[in-house]
Length: 177
Image (cartoon, rainbow, N blue to C red):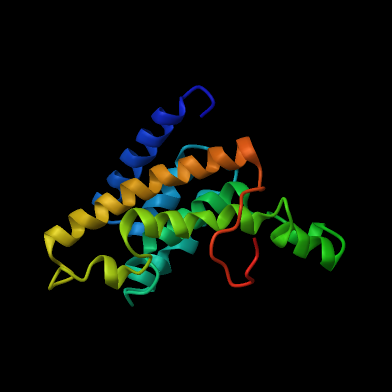
């Protein structure tokens, strides 16, 4: 991993994710497995199992796009809390999320950028122009979203390593700045 440039890592993530999708993995699994295979994390390969239910907008329900959930999980493999209970106090655990620096500042960027780039975070919205789920053009659009999301995952993994978790909040539930 360290020997490849950021652009090379992005391209490799795109290629792997696209390959996995073409092999029959769903959108979320394809992204998680691609990022796993780039050795950003020492988590076991079985983490891909957590992504299975998110394909098709959560079990084909059309809700949050599986590319977005796969992207979030892939970045979380690297920047998520591996043992949140290792921090002794409840206040410190909450501060890790909400503080400055804080993980929510970092992760908050991802759905906003996804929506800005693709027009929605919702699978049903992203695929509504296709009359049938089995439409080959829908599959091509999903392939594009998968590949771009895998590249985006590399961007955020590197950003977190370089900048930490001090980004400005975007729109959020707690009205944090």
